[in-house]
Image (cartoon, rainbow, N blue to C red; front, side):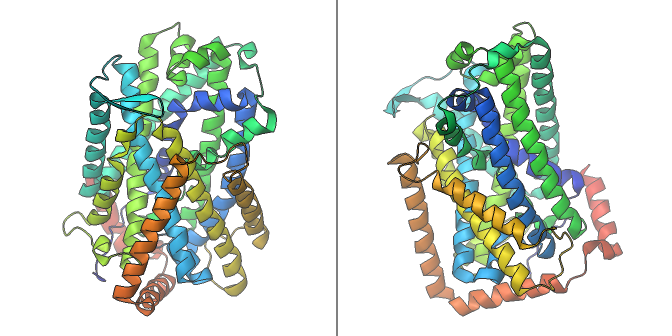
Length: 491
């Protein structure tokens, strides 16, 4: 297994499509109305600007570390070198929950969009969860979609990257049409109220933003599959975050500028309804927006299968999870067993109905912030302990960037705690967090007992030393030519 290598085939376009497509996803179509009604139009924009500032600082830490140690598994190796094995497991396992929650979210989002495209398709009552009726055909759409996404990822990064590039273009077209159409046909009076519940409303939306911005950190997870200079990895990561901030602010503006509060309140898909109204109540234009939303579902679904499976692959390769999860498929060179594990965990999500959308956003968001705090700590620790570490993308400002990232992350993390207006809901959201932590603890203890802590340390030290000793890929002309031919064949 030690000789198995991931294919190094991702270029500029592939990396941007992977990160931006993963970040944008479907959330902007399903939950934009919740943002506006929860905080007001301007309140929602402020929430996403605050969330974006947090992610920029976290992204800067990731960008420097990913360019210095471009290893599949990202934070596993950053945090191990800086903070030790146990902290590295906690950081990576928390990140995996964030990724898995997004994959599960998309499995619930897909049948939701069908209610706009095919009204009344949901039939076959099964049971009621949290006041919402779960129907058989609704569940079936999510389950079938989940199986198809798992299959695409199983077949390899070559297929995934091509699909991601195409779908990301579809998303961009639909989003641009929404914002431009709303800007022309909308009215500023529709944006009132600008705020709902003051800072309380802003906090309720703010805790959703980590979930909506997650995706840039897929880049470190796939670092060993990127065929670019190491400095470029960091640059693309930051560019993807900035684009996502612009995107979310634009969507909130477009919807609130076009629809009245009453129209938002009664709409199932506010973005699609805003698009239709902007173009003379055209159902076709609403469907075009939904098409972009479906593209978002698929890009996010694919992207987080990639990120989650690579993180699990790295943990298993290091002996912190059962090593079978670290095996690559002999033909497709994908961590196929890690992909199947994610498929098993997330294909069940549609059984919990539409209420699971909010549960997954909140629980997954908290897990992501925990991982981000630890990565920021690793950034500071490595700046102090390894001042001579080669950093192709070196962040100006030194440890100050890391401290700002920690302060902002801890501040957001506090918003999830009991007593806050935006606290996680008991039992649903806390059960997800507690169950995941217990599941990880069991797997970690089993793996440490079977393979040994020293073995894990040895494997990770070897991987880090190997990547630090390697020359930047752009200096390897032969490898570049091979990858160029491979990429041309794919296109």
